[in-house]
Structure formats: structure tokens, C-alpha cells
Length: 394
Image: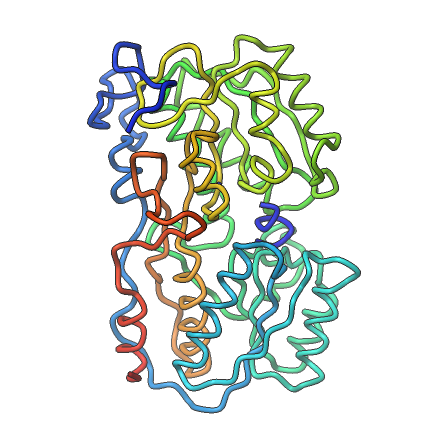
């Protein structure tokens, strides 16, 4: 996922049906919990997943699409690039991949300018904020190139005085129609999960990303939703930036110290699997002498709920191995890519954007976990066939 998202996861021994938890074993909500917080069953079974469009304009052949991956070394970015290639070629266009390399050495800006020089018809951006590439995007707009962002904030989203440079809108679903709403949903789902999983009694160490506006919307989505839970408390906030994304770096050490200062903590929220898995957040929990809960709530009091994540294969493998409790805000990566292509097609033909059905669910060891290690989650929606039908292609 861009440097914002790309750095970016039966009951185990940690679970127990005789201990208090967030919900009945079937996931129904305790009567004591807020009525406007989704039940665990809703998070597991439906979330905000909808349906893809069923109709659309016939595509014009021969368009040249430049796809700027957030970084092919990140599984999430590579998965969307692979799906994007399939979608672009299915609709009859030319796919050109540029590896954004997590923004290293100005790779995002260079990629946009490469697309401009090649006279691209459209540019697809993957999960890095407009504010980091405002000047080259202004150049793309001046050149008449359409730009759509997958999980990208527009410049105007972060700064009302800034220009709108993502010229193609992509409403994700009926609930989260804008980029800020979508980013807030990552945080909102995490809050809804911990409210349910803890029966509204969580003491949380919150690892809050900073340094780009996308993380700020996520953070606010989490903290605002958590306010609905009178018995939930953030006992400490540990901040991190992309520069902290190294094993045993300053963020991991700060998390270890927080765990030792707060033995009362019952949950640790880490928003991206990359930080929990690769950078060492989950390991920091066990290094502090704490077990990580696994399986279906209710959980016993001798484990910590490790939660958060947007849905990547390495995070799912940690869940499978009992090293992480839940990826709380999982969206279908490949569907996001097909949605971007559909949105471009509508823009090329002068038609308005429509909700794409892309939403989120929650995954734990007992719910929605992909069967094969190293694999991504796919919903029970045949969105590929739906898009091909809408485009009139086979």
C-alpha cells in the first residue's frame, strides 16, 4: 500500500468461553453496548461490502493507462497492480506499470511525469497522498490527463485551499463515498471491533500514524467511534511515522516501553499489518510478556487483543498462526483496482461516478480467513464478471 497503506495483517489457548467478552459466542451484541455500533456478526458477515455496478457505458478502445504502484515490494501494492493489469486489458486498453517504490527518491513524482511525457490518457495512483505530488499532478491536469486515486486523498481533502487534482471520482460504496470517509472507515471498523470484542471494556494502547493526512483521517475515525464506548479507554498513544518502519526502530521500542508502563492494557491497536508483522509490533507485545488473543471472543483475561489492519496476506498468516487477533478493516484489493478502471471508463464517456460496492469486513482466525497461507481475501461477489458484463466484454 503506498507508504501510508503499503507500510502496511477454532479458539486458541488464549480464548475461553468461560470468561467475559464482547459478545455472545454467536457474535450478537450485548445489550450494554451502544446500539449504533455494528455487532461482531455484522463486521464478520457483511460490513460495508455492496455490489458492483450492473451497467455502464461501452468503452472506447485504445486508451493508454499509466498505473503508479505504491511499491511492488509491498504485497498489497503488487496485488492491486496485478488486478489492475487484468482489468485494463479486459476493457481493451494498454496497461503501463510504474513502480512507485514506496516514494523513495521521488519515484511517485517521476512516475507521474513519465506518464505525462508518454501522453497517457489516464493515470491511476495507489495509496499515496496528493499533497506529496501536488506539482506533477497539476502538470497532469494541465495536460488534460485524467487521474483517479485508489485510496488516495486529494489535495483539497487535506487542505480546503488546495486544488482538486484527482479529476476522476471513485465512490467506494453507499456509506463511504469520498476519500476522507473511506480513510475514516479504516479507523471506524477497528473501533467497532474492539468495542464488541471487549464487551465495551477495553484499555487500549493506540499506535497512531502521523506525517500524512491519510493517517490523520484514520486516527480520527478510530477515536471518534471509540467515544461511543463509555467503558473503553485509550491508556497511551504511541506515534509513528513512515521513517519508523524498520525492525527494532524507535517506534517498536516506544511500543515496548508503553506495554511495560501499562500492564493494565487489554488491547493494542496497530492500523497496518506491515507495522504489526514486518516492523515488529506483534513481537513487541510478546516481548513484553503478554500473550496475544486468538479466535472468537470472548477472550480470557490473560491475553491482549492485537487488532487493526487493512487486509494483507502477511497479516492473515499471523492471524492463522495465533500471532495477531484480527485484521479489522479488510477491503478486497483486487476489487479496488477493477473499480478504478470502471470509474475511468465512466469519466472518459462523460458519465457520473457511481458507488462501486467496495467495502470492508473483519477477519479473525475463525471468520473469513483465506484458506491458503500467503493468499489475499476475496469476497463472495463475482465483481469481475459484473464489470465485464457492464463493459460489454467477455
